[in-house]
Length: 431
View 1 (cartoon, one colour):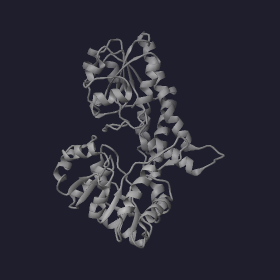
View 2 (tube, rainbow, N blue to C red; view 1 turned 90 degrees about the horizontal axis):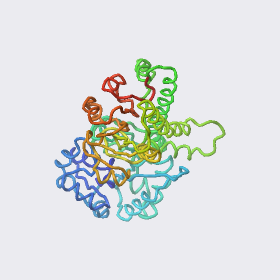
View 3 (cartoon, one colour; view 1 turned 180 degrees about the vertical axis):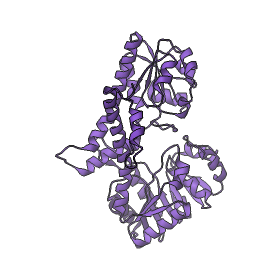
View 4 (cartoon, rainbow, N blue to C red; view 1 turned 180 degrees about the horizontal axis):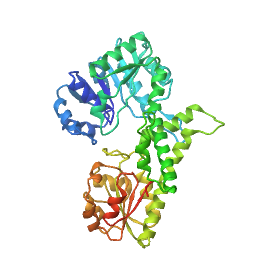
């Protein structure tokens, strides 16, 4: 198999297939990335990936920037190219189209092409089939097989979830679907056959929209519960004892998929006269940054300090815990807002290197938590990395400039523990 695109989705898939015994050609145009992988290192943080990579690279997993060479050696092609949208929500598929044209030039009869990228319904049958057919002069469904099998992985758990989460398998005809089913059955895990390609395409978007709306619901409930003087997390825990209720934890919600897919779905729907839950959910989650900034102001008021010229430490830059992915992270607008208010910002993230952090966030960065927090007037938890949950709060209190604020933007900490350590605690939906 040839896996095109060795990012957060393609590389774990290529490694998993190779570990199962398949000969895999990993293709990426980024030669520096390819060299990093050849050295047995993942270009991004993913638990267990380095060790798995070293067991297959140069053996069952072969790497190349030459897409034509890989396709000539492979029985099938898995396209794992990222997609994006414009501000209006319209899809930007230039990268995908470029890859499809390159694939088509080397495509031969009998090969299987599987799209893994997140796309709107109709993309596989219309755009993908059309481009491949036009540039290969082969007929999809007759002279080559074409399937859509969306990725469903969560960064930080990719190697586990690649077999733990069911594979949605679809194809433009029965033969294409059967070939795709055989591949994912070989990979391992449960295979769910979709009744249509369009249903599979939409199901992937629904996955992300569901989480996005659920987080927005949690955030709105959190703001309400705080006004009522009730601890949001206590209420969530009780509510979730019902098998019919699964409210997520409130907090900053970002990431390329959770922000992109709701907007793209709203775009596909077109004009809508009534209220839109999906659009409103995006606004609720985006507005949470402003709420966090208000909590910071409240903390400074209670500790009796002026904000301008004070030092604020932001712990966590990635969009979620357990990853180094900063695409569409809410830490970026949060830091920008703090800077506009006149604060001196320092940052820390266990998975991000200092140079990269300083370039992206335009802020000072420390590799150690306590160094980042030294002489700070306020500490903000922007990402709920496990390392922060294990922090010694008394040690943290010894290095900050007391009295100091502690703003929990991820609902990760017990307010009582933070207060006992000497901080003024502020959290989403927490007393």
